[in-house]
Image (cartoon, rainbow, N blue to C red):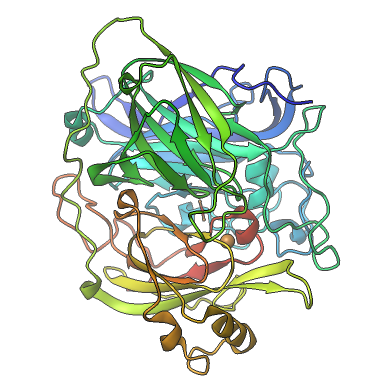
Length: 555
Ligand code: C2O
Ligand code: CU
């Protein structure tokens, strides 16, 4: 039975304020308690309620995605994340992966990462800092609640999601994710972008499959079952869900809207376009505003990427516009590859003339952030992506960074206050969205590897840059254009297959001080202590199977 499209209205998730206001009007730190609940959610009018794990201020208020947290720049938000989940998971997790659950504990291990957040590592949601209901069992790097988010970072879009070792793909699939904004009225109001709850909306996109009884469907048999009985290299669903509704509609006026679009899928890329000649004007990417707006007709968002766009429905005279996706899945290397467009959601454009639209997109947004300059790099590192298959098949068994497992000792030890060039060498056939915790990075260039097959074979066999003639293969390949809306400071980038992607990673805050736009070289907390940080591929099925490495910041 096919689900009918555009029958459910797009919900706005509950909003929680991450700060307090005194009677005198002063802003003070906010204290939130957000629970994780075993509950149900209606994804579609004609689908029975679905069992989910959901975040909420209470069980009754729990939603998929969870509440949108609005934090104020420079005002701390403290969140006590409380696990109220049952003794076991309802989705198949794979006991042969290195997982939190392998500890043999009862309960569903969870831990929350604020993606894009600049916070001490004890509040960063390290994958080994997991805990089960009532803290009955805790991981080896657990730290006591609450988590502290200083919000001493530029305004922009973040999100929070589960990050438990080896369980992230099933915990997020079950519903554990939500949006988080850092706002800064003093800097943002003068931009005069569309604002207010009606005109400034979060859109959280993901794909799922459902059974007729409404249950989430996930294949219980692995692609390589004698190695991993359940693990699949990528989860794809045929239903597109926005803010928890399958193919929803939204009534809009013929005016400008701001949409903060997050791809919260496990593995699906979305290449989005609008019908009726409507365009997107990008104002931010991931957690940072762009220097200047960039208009596109189509753009690609990988898992965990955020596109902050303005759409002016006055540019169309049609009564409706459909947002659709034509990215193939899995997402391959050649951006020319196209799939049949699939609808994501529909906008019903109403003419009712009420108040005029006084919002705008200014020619200049946040031009004062430093520009990436590779000459300031204190070090160059190589991060090589590998996929391992079983003899004689193309079916992957695991994915490694630098030929090391996640639990191997730390090798990335950047110094606080410096920047580094990372040459990310992708020897696989897939595009992997690379995410670095704490740091922001900018893409310097992306080039195809030369004679990649020979190089891959040598590296998979020997993992020896010298013996495999790394230099010969990295230089001189075809250069790929980085889309203009992705040239600013980001926390995720799509690492093209069979290519080297050079990024400049900042291990220092970006404009951390509200009072001055000057760059500080120290974070506002001790980055060298605590469980440490990680970097990883953000295809959840990959990060759960070892495509993640620890990172220790030193002074
Ligand atoms: Cu959005 Cu380490 O993750
Ligand atoms: Cu990956």
